[in-house]
Image 1 (spheres, rainbow, N blue to C red):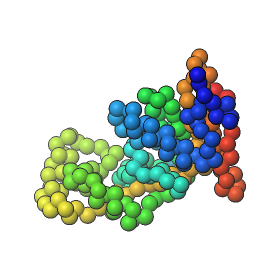
Image 2 (image 1 turned 90 degrees about the horizontal axis):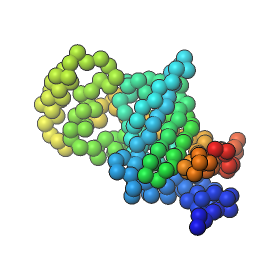
Image 3 (image 1 turned 30 degrees about the vertical axis):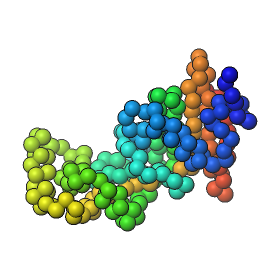
Length: 208
């Protein structure tokens, strides 16, 4: 028998006033069932002319302050964020038949936070952050591989590879979070949390 919460939704939506708490529980379930990268998100940004673009990135941290990912600050996504900080994320956990959509404004993380995550990465990934001029045109693949070799020569000490100034993190501060569950005959279940002017989360059901 399909148990329901107080709103008439599947019990997996629970009865929580804080969407971050609900996300944490859904994310724990996704980590158990998704074969690859339960932290993968489709990140949608748009430039100053409101031309959108979307790509997959990996969320590395989340809490009540937002959802964090890391990237080259000269990449297309970063350039667009600098022009227009409004963005959207979407998690799709196919194994659970669930989605989570998050809208909000993006701000940069503090240097200390970026340093801490950067230093937790493997040596090859840290070198890659130096070598890749993300989103720029390559003449050929060997051009990149040669640059990687040069930075390996420069940073031979694997325990001492500083974070490049052009590489850091972005934090999406949510103003709305929607939880979606697949339903029979496309009668899906949707629960949206929206912040009001006082910063309080307000829940509402959405029609599929």
